[in-house]
Length: 318
Image (cartoon, rainbow, N blue to C red):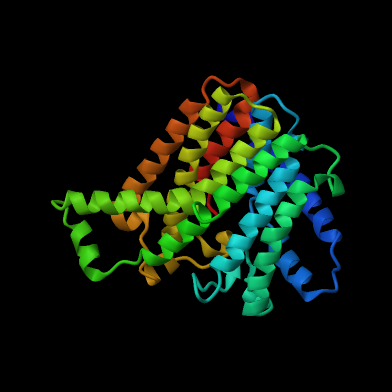
């Protein structure tokens, strides 16, 4: 694809606004005087790329559907994603003070309020998904909504994102492991670590990216062949996204990213640069994106947003 033929920046801005307008409506149905609602809104409306819902809208378009039909699922996924960020930032997990350039939820309010705000976003997301008529004019039929509930809860739960977070918390380096992967002759240990890291992020980050694409496709009535191709696309960009996150944590600009860098090394976390090195990590991210683009090569120009997003993932600065 000619990279100049599609204006990704304009596409992202239009669809980010579309998603945020809908999220504002969802929050607007709750009493804004309640501290819980204020905390939910603080994190949900703090900006960000809105990559997951935009991927869902783009997948619906690629399948020839009306992207607006996918909007309920896309908003529910963004609410679940935001809950995961609130909990990730807690002192018991990543212990971060900034998120999207603003104080994290537990810093703005309290640790207990942040936990409950995350819980509120998670549970209300499924209310939105099962009662889309309260906010949206277009939405899938009931049988598709039920399937979306099943797939999104599976991706977010104990066999998906939550398990990935658990594995990530457990995957901290000790000095002997660091020494073993530095030894280039000890390829077995290095590969084992790399495989385990792929598993962590396939669950923690990848599953929610994959279900975003799947939800858009399902909302548009995609057939099994389209779902399979889009699944391969999403698997690979999901992992590429995390590889780039690890790279940016090493060499990103904190002013652009809206959060501190270097926290992975400080917390002795297992990352792709720690195992592969920076340059090999960048090459690996590029390889993953190339595979993702091949997976959707048979789609027509309606899939250009997906192609542009794949390239954006490895060229982003935040």
